[in-house]
Length: 336
Image 1 (cartoon, one colour):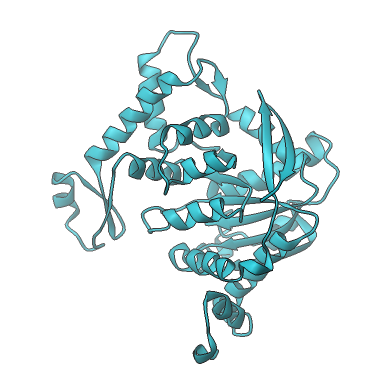
Image 2: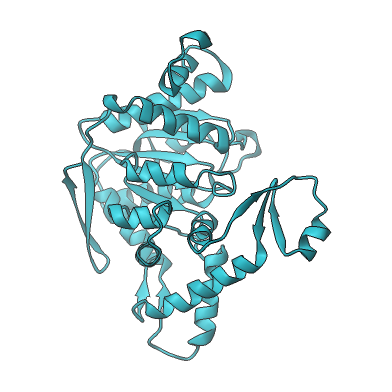
């Protein structure tokens, strides 16, 4: 490592590739992501998000990688998307300390996310806004992808993940949406519409069907996992569904990279290796893959910054256009 020769994040992570331990692994993650972006077969890149990413200050990093076309489909926990909405309606994240008096914070209606504070009363406002705005959604069953696209269109915040995805036509799924404060807002909507047959219903199985269609239309796929959890498992399971339940003829994900702080020896999904996923057929036997055990607030800005620094290596890259008719989709390439 020679820091005197580093001219940018691209150089830094390239030098990481010749070092050791997690620096080398993070450098390999850059190589895998770049390979997916430059592949002439134009793989569909899925981004899986979990963890306190907005509280960690990564909102604009996530927004930018969607805007720049570094990913094609987003799968997230509801919490990440909820805190994106919270900021869109004026909520703030404040610098705090993990050694605060949490009983005193409760008295002040401040919620703590490790060393960051959020406004409990503004959270309640956000829940109620989601409940009220859902009244404008068509009164029928719909996938999380359709509902989150609707929310993104209603909050035209230039720094918003959901608003940027809606503007760019990037599908956003959240297979565990109700396990978040968005679920609280939807519960308020449900309470106000109990007994009405013509109300909005979240159709989680339709999420599966829509995901499988995107996979079926993809000649090759890549996955970028920030954390693990439900998004990682759901995207990987999509390959299984597409292959044996829907007759997709193809391999597992051809490119795969993950940043996580979880370890494989506990046996959980979040820390399980990408090699382990090969035994399930979820990752291709010939996949280019890398896994770095590094915390996302460090690893993700380095990766995305390095990709931006080296953008001449992967630009221009065509975008995917998803034309939805109900739960059916046609996917086609468009100019960048």
